[in-house]
Length: 173
Image (cartoon, rainbow, N blue to C red; front, side, top):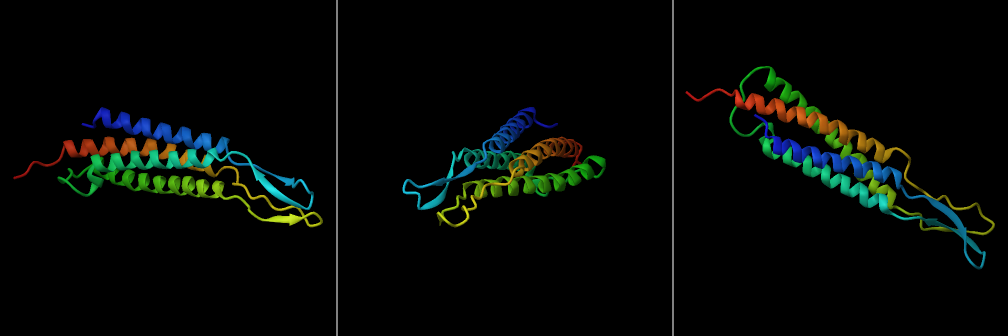
């Protein structure tokens, strides 16, 4: 039987990761071109950098959730053998899908955090074109949030089917 405490903790971690990823999408850095006081060159001024912290927080909570599920289920490959059948087959498929969703979510969250923290440092002279103030493309943290959500669902189903296959495992001779 699947532990309700583990399921609740994993759900809360995934919920926090999802909320932080959505907050990071809402608070992405924006930039504007500003002239210096002597009006000799233009440069980029960025607003707050909260989205990077939110993205890293979502990354860490998602890692903690996945790590907890894998430790409790012994990463599917360690521990006593599982009973052959539908529960084990579904657990295997959900294990693979869970890792795919997890990796995609982590790539989006980490890449979004790194790119959001990057600020253009150069400046241009007054007569030149204004500098290109690079900012994070819209939707990177949202993609991470959606895959955190998908991973939350799939990992809960994986844990349920793994537990039911483990409970029905063959007794030793």
